[in-house]
Amino acid sequence: MTIAGPGVEAAQRAGAGARPRVVIVGGGFAGYNAARSVARRMGDAAEIVLVSPTNYFLYLPLLPEVAGGVLEPRRISVSLADTLPPTVAHAQGEVDDLDLAQRTVRWMDPEGRHHTTGYDRLVLAVGSVHKLLPIPGLSEYAHGFRGIPEALYVRDHLIRQIDLAAGTDDPEERRARCTFVVVGAGYTGTEVAAQGQLFTRELARARGLGENAVRWLLVTRGEVLAGLDEHLATTADRVLRDRGVEVRTGETVEEALADGVRLRSGEHVPTRTLLWCVGVRPDPLIESIGLELGEGRLVVDRTLTVPGHPEVFACGDAAAVPDPGNPGRFTAMTAQHAERQGKLAGRNVAASLGRGRRRPYRHRDLGFVVDLGSTDAAANPLHLRLAGLPARTVARGYHLLSMPGNRLRTAADWLLGAVLRRQSTQLGLVRSPSVPLDTSSPEVPHHPRMSFPPERSVGDREATS
Ligand SMILES: Cc1cc2nc3c(=O)[nH]c(=O)nc-3n(C[C@H](O)[C@H](O)[C@H](O)COP(=O)(O)OP(=O)(O)OC[C@H]3O[C@@H](n4cnc5c(N)ncnc54)[C@H](O)[C@@H]3O)c2cc1C
Image (cartoon, rainbow, N blue to C red; front, side, top):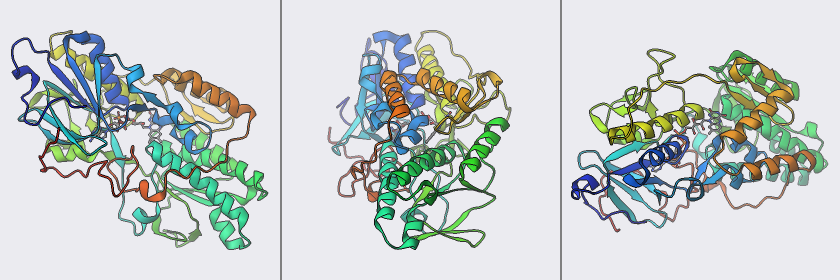
């Protein structure tokens, strides 16, 4: 989609009567909700362009269920075109240059062509990417968990390891293939370990290995779900240990190797699987802009406006939003904050264009859910402490209500999952080199000989649109 050619002036300077153009970068929790919110308030009085590399909104909290063979990937990939108001135009691509002085945004589309557009209002909602640590072998042997390609890779990989384990006569190889190491026990690592263990145990039983052949380690420097409510943390820790997951708190990985990992304690764990879930950092585009950062995130005021740039807003994981509940701190990187901030950014963009009044960011903690598969979960809706089946019911209900689409299909997968075994076919469509850990674009598979996603090199200003 070509919005405008290179060097085109911002819409507000194109002549009297031109509709203001709002460009939103990122189509995740924050960007998707910002687009909806501006569209609802502005109607067709504004041109709204959402730039993102995928044509769907990804409901990330259910990604572990894709890796665990419970949900098909399209269930949690909600079509932008089908669910956003028709006044929002989607430009598929990845932004690789922002010029705040000229008020232009440039992106590369999936076929490698550059496009540039001017804007009157800009919303930056580019989210976050994997946080890496300087550990030998990490980028070669570990995989992250943030996008559909990675979830598909992990799902196939788990099945492949069990299939290969069932096919070998070498007990050491079998043991290594049946050992799975997850590093990081935030909600991503905890849920991946919980779902992955259930899935591989079922596979091992079906392949005649016996479910006890499977060994999962959850390695974390701190405690499980550190920073979340204590009830959630202790419930998740207990459920995982009861199921036989080896929870190694106060532990780290010192080296990743082709045949295993070496822990700080000196123990060598033979494995072919290292899943890196050690938190996130803001998308590198944020740092390249050259504005003030707080903990790597773009500093905004309480109305989500970038200081010195009243036409630029930021929200979600990429933004350092002052937390009204914790003075002096920024809001946590969660879907709940991102969604609410997106809605507010949309509201404040409309207010800056003469519709309504700006509001500061406020939030009320309505609780959190952690889904651990089977009949296990932990939840604290409205500070009510739930575990087991009641928590699982609340978690699933919460997810269905929060998803902007595909609810019936998701519920149907869950119903089928209650009576049928998980499917164990490997499609092999996403191979290891397509999902490198060190990437600024976990949402799209990498094809070394193709140009998408682009390298984030600012300075190449040639545009082909
Ligand atoms: C596996 C997993 C499970 C999680 N579970 C929970 C949970 O249970 N509860 C919870 O509260 N939080 C959870 N989170 C965290 C939550 O998903 C994030 O905090 C939330 O997605 C942040 O929203 P966002 O819009 O800022 O970023 P994202 O949702 O990541 O969206 C960023 C968007 O920006 C796009 N983008 C990035 N760079 C560019 C670019 N250069 N040009 C154009 N577009 C770009 C991306 O493609 C994407 O569309 C989970 C995260 C993961 C990875």
